[in-house]
Length: 81
Image 1 (cartoon, rainbow, N blue to C red):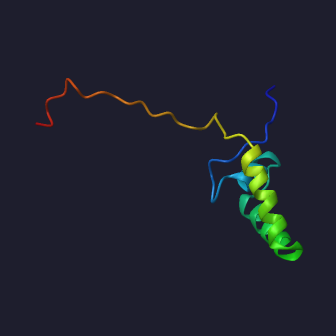
Image 2: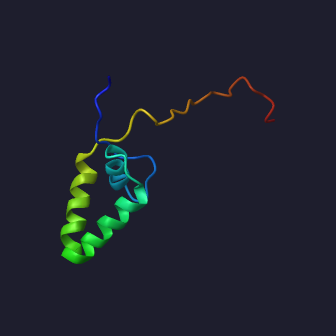
């Protein structure tokens, strides 16, 4: 059984923090974003922004679902000329 990790989501609007939190707790991403925005407006925008920036710096990127692109050399392909 693989341990669950709190990582940034690839389904991101800014940096993927709230999407990652939604994925970790199996919640709807839009719901988490709306709750965070409402809490930020009710408690003050500055603390919400500071917390978001700290989480964006601390949380790791999701490495499992990133697709790596391969750079293929077309030196032998003369069809471009």
